[in-house]
Image (cartoon, rainbow, N blue to C red):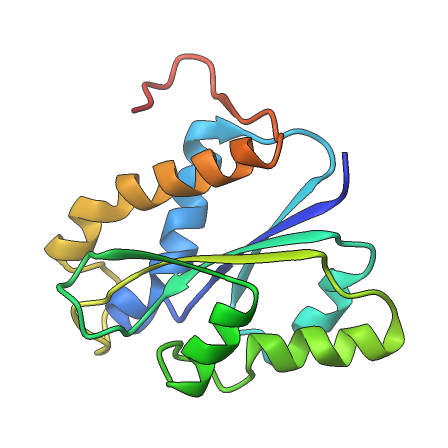
Length: 165
């Protein structure tokens, strides 16, 4: 299997901006990922994420995405769609993902596949808990990530004794 990186992005002290990190934690609480899949709680690491891209062929990112839709709405972007979302300031980060990939590509190979699963946040204010709107949709976001990974041929299995949807 080609090396795969799953990153949860976001700032967990700004409530719904941390949805990517919260989703990643829930994924790890409920599922076992096979060897060849690296998981990173990337928070808001910025340029230091470059080190994690070495040898990675596929990248799946989980993050908050500001589309103007109803809170909790799930969105999926792939490849160049991510660059367009960044250009429209839909993603709440100082370092642009496409720029990061381009910088890494100068040193080595760029990932072949880049997919972002996101959720529309309700608020971006200080606090550690997700809003009820986003908390209610967190399982749906995790399910979407699991289905994406399975479509890539990744054998994602539920943890024994844990109910999954």
